[in-house]
Length: 153
Image (cartoon, rainbow, N blue to C red; front, side, top):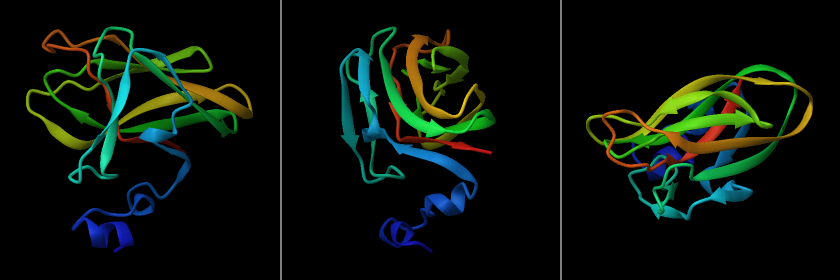
């Protein structure tokens, strides 16, 4: 077990969970807040001991990340928390909508992995946008929680 696993009980090292990741970003590696107020929630029960979340919890809150990657079709993995007050994350790469990830659940769940197929049009530097544009009909608020994200083959 890795050093992270040793410190946090049964938590596995990221490489053990996602052996084929190409790009990996923690919640605090964002490049810009487009809309809303965002903060870190430090929580030892989280895989990486915390999450980035929108304290403004308002529709269209958005954060962006810059990353370098080759072109092609890949899987985006979002490490997040789900709950009754979570929005649906609208995901875009370089301004092109890729799809949505619903963070709603009937009970709180930490360390959830959600995936989405994404297409990267060219080699080079790219922008990933995560936006609270919509929400599940059963959700009662607009929170997004981001522990980390990565792209895998």
